[in-house]
Length: 176
Ligand code: GTP
Ligand code: MG
Image (cartoon, rainbow, N blue to C red; front, side, top):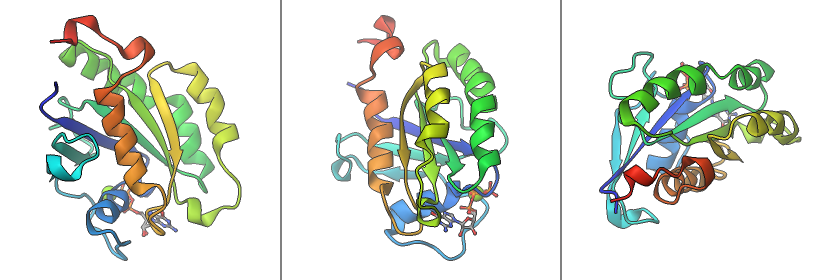
């Protein structure tokens, strides 16, 4: 059994990384957020999988990132550019490559389409080809930090991706 899970949020500026973390913690949308959230730890007994879970806001440097067990790539569903950037995958290519090197295991990725309150249409059509391109992508979820839609689900998926990895992420050496 893992003793904890470390979730890292990355993505283009202003897609709502910090807001997502604050919304999860306070169960309400903060009108103003700092540039970055402090690292938070959710105690085991309030997480669905009963494992202490750390959530780290991307800081532009790699400090504290190397221990990430799962990376949430956040984009904004109303911002095409932020979606295209996921496709170019600066995060999954470079960040995952360095994490892979350090952890000797693939790190699962989760695509997070934030600000679903601002659009009527789903971004899934745009995101699907990207998902098919990268086997590291475990799942995708659309959510809204503003109306708290799918926020707890997002962090649950991240936790689950670490604790119950599927397919190519399975790494026999890691097991016990
Ligand atoms: P950087 O730290 O600068 O990279 O930005 P960030 O990704 O942390 O985004 P941040 O949480 O600072 O949010 C950016 C802006 O988007 C703020 O004005 C938020 O209020 C707004 N915002 C965040 N989430 C949502 C959402 O779900 N819906 C709407 N409508 N606005 C949101
Ligand atoms: Mg921020």
